[in-house]
Length: 416
Ligand code: UD1
Image 1 (cartoon, rainbow, N blue to C red):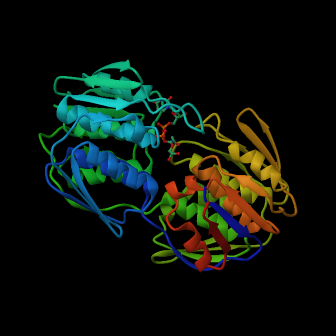
Image 2: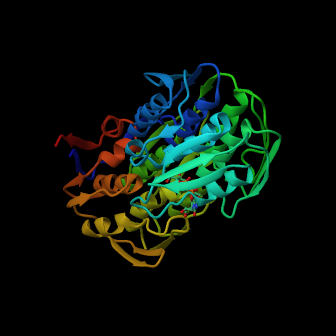
């Protein structure tokens, strides 16, 4: 298994271009299933989850092509089964449920199961699709769904689920009549999906708010669409500048989609300034501990929790992080402690007391954002930190070592 060797202590300086958003590209790729003409997407990041999704689309009967940051998808002969071998490697596979039911009135999709950061069930997706007329059975680890044509419904989510809202947006786009989604997720990636669907001819309004209305149409056509930039990648590089005492200019940075993160970083003493198409990030004196609670958008994103924890580890005073989205998303804590951090965990809250410095040690990545936090810690720690199991990083950060090396980091990948 590959590992990263990071020699810490170098202030990062220079420019980084932010890639297209993984979490926006995945649902948009699934939504291509709904179209009857070719779709041309640009700004698609070259990441393992994207390649897995393209494989799934091919198994479901699409032709796909991926060159540089451009993906072309054309539906040829749609099939209704998403097998376990692929779904188990990527939870987002469950997003083909809505499109398959809308188009074929049947779907067989492997149940994604648990993952390193918690139970992550899909009951809210199923309950909402049932309101539109779908019927489900669970059989041998598969969700078997069927329906007559899906019909519009008034759905009030118990929780503003990101994946659930995305599945429903896709299903409702080709359903009969109007669907109203209340307590819908407001994440920018959900809005990007809605805008993509509208570019294909869907009639969606209210995206970005918690009430979304969808007027079903009879078909969707192909289109050209540029995927939004990745706000979590951008936030991670903001943290990298701050933790190394560096200064980075981030191009294509979705600054306004990062309000909650920027607010906390500024409170900690990080200096951030937006210019025309870039954001300058610089550490401004000693960082101070803050209190953070992860929340659905526009609150502080769970996907930035592990990274901000590293900054808090090196701050003056104490701070706390309360994780409200996933019950088990603190796997990075013990690894950070191995590097010398002072963190105490109680239920869903981590109390972090700042220390003067971190010292290198071998650490193991457990999930995507936990891996990012270990890289950040390695960039700040004295000595050479070895981050093992970095295949998680390849799921979510495009050319991470290349981008970091280009701004001065001493980081190398050792093939294993
Ligand atoms: C979540 C994050 C998203 C992040 C992604 C990848 C939120 C609100 N969502 O999206 O920002 O990019 O992980 O890390 O921050 N739940 C159920 N039943 C369901 C669906 C969800 O109980 O059917 C629960 C989950 O267990 C979890 C919460 O709702 O506690 C959030 O789930 P959801 O937003 O659906 O998760 P993702 O779509 O994976």
